[in-house]
Image (cartoon, rainbow, N blue to C red):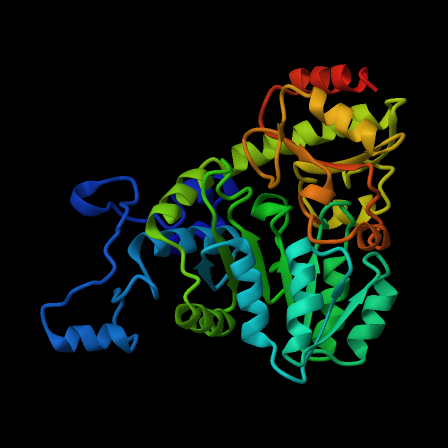
Length: 396
């Protein structure tokens, strides 16, 4: 199936067929792993035409690679973007994007609830390069709009946020940024292309840690950026020279994972909703943070811009951190581990996962209580997960 016909297909079909429009070497139906570092040509003229972009082809795998190209094309199709480029990790995608488009004297506006690694880039690295960073209260849309109107080069957003699942009104904030000529970058890792389409809402670039839901099995690391051709070309040029390239073996593993993306995400959406609803009624739970719950402050906005609420939620246990440890140590069907988006449930407190780099005071300022636990649901039978959680809560 030609990729030009993919736009009319549903996401599950795109996940399987996107980027795989033809048979491969000797009729193979699956993408081959091309581990060659360099690519040869029969004559200098063809080599030169590829080098200057006149013809399609590959020269050196730090720049482009056949296996990696299929991965990029599949994600591009899922996000309905003009172009996509990949990276060795999700943080490489984030840091390369910020470095490509921000220079000394520029100003970036974002929110306080970005992923911990992103927050470190904002607070520690960008200021060293003479870039002004303004971080706003995450759900205060008026404050964000006011700061944007003062002028900025970029508005950087995450929604839902990590780990408290706060929701930002993308269409509203993107409109505000574009009015002052700012570009908008959205980290869509939590939502995935199945649950949310930031480019359709007006974003300029969408980022993913492919390590999470796109790969889906906690066995491959990567990142990807999607957007219009001009911006992605600039980003590709920065990445190809700075070298944070995705390896062909990893691209293959991510491609294999993406084929089941819709199946996994729909199941994880369902599992998260059921467990969040169950814990919201539990006497030993202080609060549950999940945009799918009507009690969530961002539920109305999330319902308007998301088709599903995701597989991640967080909750706080009554008492102190000793209760957190007692509960977590008693679970049988969840890995006490960082990351998210895996087929197996992953759980842990932000102090050792998303915000391990932050101090207790910094986490407090971000509205992250020490008794908060982030839970990323897998695809297990939810009845078994609920029973396991209930059993562990009895230990408190």
